[in-house]
Structure formats: C-alpha cells, structure tokens
Length: 227
Ligand SMILES: O=C(O)CCC(=O)C(=O)O
Ligand SMILES: [Fe+2]
Image: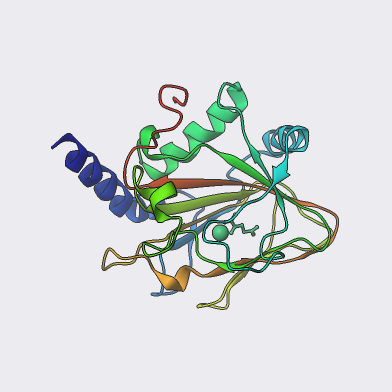
C-alpha cells in the first residue's frame, strides 16, 4: 500500500539521519548511549537568525501543549507559525531537511518560539503519548514525531538553556547553534531519555526555531511547503 511505503520511507530516512549527521563537518555527537543527539555550532549565520527573530516578533501567539496536565505554567512561551511562502523561511526549512536527509513531506512546518524573562517549557518529551487524549488529533494522519531539530537564534543575557534530564547535559543558547536528537530509540519506540527542559530565561529574551519530523507525510499544508 502507498501509505505503508510512505511510513517505511520516512522510517528508513529517519534511521539513516544519525549516520548522515555524524558525517557533517564541525558537528559534535553527545557522548551518551541514551539518545542520539548532535550539536552543530554556526548552522545558521547571524543575519538569518536576526531576520527570523523579526518574523517571530511580528507574529507570536501563546504556545500550546498536547495532553494538558493541569499545570497552567508548564509552557509559558509564545510561538510563531512561520510563513512558508517567505523565501527566508523556505530556505531555512530546506537547509534543515537537507541536513537530515528526510524528504520535505515528512516535516512539520517550521515554528519559532520566544521566551521572555521567567518563561520556560518544563520537562517534557517532543513525541506524543500514543495512549494520550490528543494522539488522534495530532498523530492519526502524520504519525509519531521522529527527529527534533532546534536552532538558537540569540543568546539571552542569562538563563534559557536546554537541559536533558537523562544525561544531565545543559545546552547553552548560542546564536546559530543547532541541536538535533532522535525521539525514537533503537527499539523503534519513543525514547523517554529524550526528556528535556527549556529552562527559564533570567535576563533578556530567548528565540529559537523548532523543526519536527514525522513518520508519515504532514497533511495540513500540502503543496505549500517545498524546498
Ligand atoms: O526552549 C528550549 O530550549 C526547548 C524547546 C523545546 O523543547 C520545544 O519547543 O519542544
Ligand atoms: Fe521540546
């Protein structure tokens, strides 16, 4: 069936992503067996970062979460659905896809996130809970999330690091630096060791872009997103 072929293709691309990333000049692999994770300083140039920040400032809305847990302060940032008709957004999106080797149809549209002083995204995983109430809404068609790529667009004056609880590793925001990890473990199941915390900004503002990949094609913006 065409759908099964699509799942197989997305899976095999996502499986090959670690090997592909490992070969990128200047990339560092996190020294852990708990998750596949890579850090690439200078993935985006400062000018592109500044231009993305302008786009985000123009168009933010309160951030949301799937399967709300009753904690109103769980994710206090704002988010921006970047416009995929914008040549800069298209170019950055294409660059992220090219880095992973995952075809354009398996990507969610690129988002921006902004954190003011005191705002954070408490410890969470990016994959969806298959038994959660929101699975049907977010995953019935595009399937589970595989890789997460995020890029820090600036350096807040204090705070705003990303902490991975299973490894204890704290990633500091650095303009243009990319952080990538596989939400799926070697057994093909969601990897709970990807639990991470976007820590409170203490001074200044923090901006990032986030890119999530799926195991099936993203259906809601068909034809709009292209390389
Ligand atoms: O802001 C961060 O450092 C992490 C963001 C994050 O985990 C997310 O948007 O899913
Ligand atoms: Fe996250």
